[in-house]
Amino acid sequence: MTDDQLPTDSASDPPAGKQPSRWQRAVTAVGRVAVVPFNTAGYLYRTGQQNRHFTLPVLNGAFGDQLAERHDRRAIQMSFRRHGADVSVASLRLEPTADGRPRKTVVFLHGLMGDEVIWQTGSPEGLRYGPRLQQDTGANCLYVRYNTGLHISENGKQLNLLLLELLTTFPDAIGDLILMGHSMGGLVIRSAGYYASPPQNTLERQASINEAAQSDAHYVATQTSRPQPSTWLAHLRDVFLLGVPNDGSFLEQNSHFTSVVLRKINLRPTRFISGLIDKRSNGIKDLRHAILVDEDWQDPHANDLFPPRTLVPPLPGVRYHVLVGSLLKSANSALHDYFGDGLVGAGSALGRVFGDPALPPEQQISTRVFSKLHHGSLLSNQEVYQYLRDRVNQTRG
Image (spheres, rainbow, N blue to C red):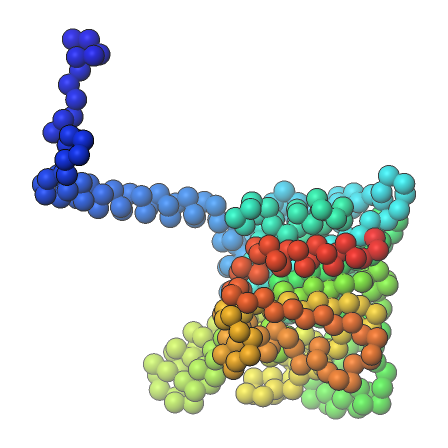
């Protein structure tokens, strides 16, 4: 029998113009249902393989403080990243332009349970903001990965030292410095700026130090070991805050309130559930009121419903770009203020400190609300990217 004489599946393919029988439709439907589990398993496997780099960051976000305390090898150490690996500052080998001029440099910080990949790949267009900015603006784009389970202030102090090392190692290659943070990453940037700034030797601050010294010796040790002013502040021109809970996270506030209520009920089951909730990392707990400095989480009243909170104002001479996502079309509602992009309320993202009328008139604060964007899509939106690109291009270099 030749190929032309091979039998065809005439039983399964009805003649043209003829509708399949009820039996044929049933067989087809059963066949489709039968392969769904296999297709689903394949999809889950492929998705898991594509996102397995998040496994360690998620673990650190949830329990990173405990891993660090035990010196567990899985505890992430703050570092610049290239090609999916930690690199030393010296290994970055930054160079000035061909004519010897320094380059503008953008440093990216991810949010809770994230890593540098969120700035690099995964958008519908392929590349995300980091590689695109490097292509379109000629800036050096650097990525930092850190343990999001640590206190925000601990990461802030580490970032301060990392940036100081960067500027010390490449003084001729780095011109204007731009910091870009998503979610918790923006808080770490603000904390780093606080620790890089000169201490405020006002009578009010000294009085608070003296008062704290009587109740918390560890606080005094922290103050005396505070780094001196860092040279990287002289290079800092722009700070971009994307979906940053500058006034705290409503999700963490609800978690804390739930834990307090369950503990007050004081039954064995409620105490057990409260204990489980309280196992969340220090980094997550700091998100409740955006705690940026050591003395706030060390305060004896840190776990009160309304704990003390140190004001961390914008750095003078730095342009701040506060970018806010909103699930809604309209930005004029209480739901918008509270829920915002689904994870960070718009009111918190805008931040009272950035709208303070007492700010110096020369302080530059730009705010922009992007409607119909959730917390994650702030990182892969063309309109957001155009805003970033245009502002980065305006920086001198």
